[in-house]
Amino acid sequence: MKTIRTMNSKLTLLLILTVATIIASCKEETQGTPPSTPRFVPKSVDTARAIRGIQPSVIRESRGGLRLEWFQNPERNLGGYEVWRTEQAINGVPVNFALRQKLPIGSQAAQNLPDTVFIDENVRTSTMYYYKLVAYSKLDVASNFSEEFQQYELRVPGTADGPRGDILLPNDSVLTFRWLDNNQSQGFYCLKVYEGDLDFREENCVAVATGQTFLASDSVRINFSRVQTNFSGTTGVKVFKPLRRGQRYFWFVMFHPLGFEVNVGAPSNRQTFYINP
Image (cartoon, rainbow, N blue to C red):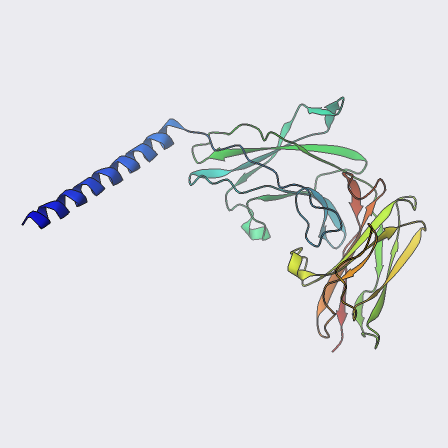
């Protein structure tokens, strides 16, 4: 009998604690506690296999924009995020931010985009854009602005030419990639080859080639039979895996007139090719 009473006491105490937790949670929700301040994902190096942070991005075959990324907020009552943008800055400090896009949780599922990514297509070339973030709860209570801001300026893009369409893989597995440089033929380029259909995940990156661009029409040869994932310095070719027959690939060239680490650049159009079996 004593054991039963002890068990009942423990169950009663557990029930009381559970109810108290629920009441406290409801009270907190009712009081409208704001979410924690969202944080941007740091911009990845432009030669990385995956695109992270803020980067110029290929949206479709002939469209480009700016891709923003941030860390997921931990709140269970999170309603979504707001992206704020400005083109105005005083002595390098952005001012007069305006709401660019409100993103309720799950609103980008149809575009196959997570809640923590926004692609801004409404951008002009030769304009520096500055961004900040706000998180808001299901009661529409907003957090503070993100402490840091992100910035990027799109330049005039180049045009990816070949390879494209159906191709035969040469016996030596060497392909020559050609493009037109519309950035007055100066600066650096970063060419990336992916398998699949516009999926920039690291595991889908097949090769990265970087170098200086001097000519209005440029090219680089990549030997896909030689897997080489490191190169010395900032330029060279990395091949992560060989090409496969019967597989579709896409590639594009990123132009960086002021250097790889500067927040200025432009993505070319996306070009696709299919290797005949």
